[in-house]
Image (cartoon, rainbow, N blue to C red; front, side, top):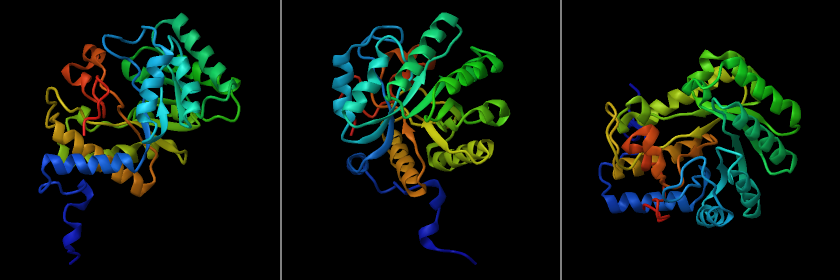
Length: 294
């Protein structure tokens, strides 16, 4: 027999059965105030969306809000004002995982790659990400993406270069895994319809799958999170309390296992409903008015 009371359901995270909403809020505040590894940076305010020009003032305002809590930020684009984010982050002492956004427009892709290389040359990038979920969306062929990865690796020295996608893409695309210096994996139990009670255990399996594909390379969780409002997906139910529980469980696990993780996201962004439905607007730790949710 191997029974121990403290091990009951220990693999699925903390037992929040006796936590009311206020206690959950206080607990998440304590976790955040203790500092987390990384946040996905959400620059778009109000009705802004990707393609709109963002300003230095709005970037600074949001960096000043999050700087007490995070060591790193992750960005998604190197154009339309997003190229200002790494420089400003460095002013605040925040490390940067900087992404070039790649899609099906060759001219835009070229602009993104040139800007990413320029930022690397300027010493503003700690990790370079060549594309985000390009294989998942089907925007480029695998060979085309590999050409972009190799272009950046040839131009950039001394900076790890990787590519961001859903964890399972690295298992089925060994050429991409081999081309990356670091595996940058998005892990979302919510998007696979997992019940909150089993979400941490599910994410552990996602992370392990990425490790299996990495062949000894570092794996960084570049996105994970839980929406605080919106429509359910399978057994995954968005709610304020579930978002708090997921944040707490994910951060505790990452700290205990020394896993580098970027939480998605910093601020709610309204534009995301176009691609994700109603849940898209509610992934932030801060709301769209830049007020902390707990």
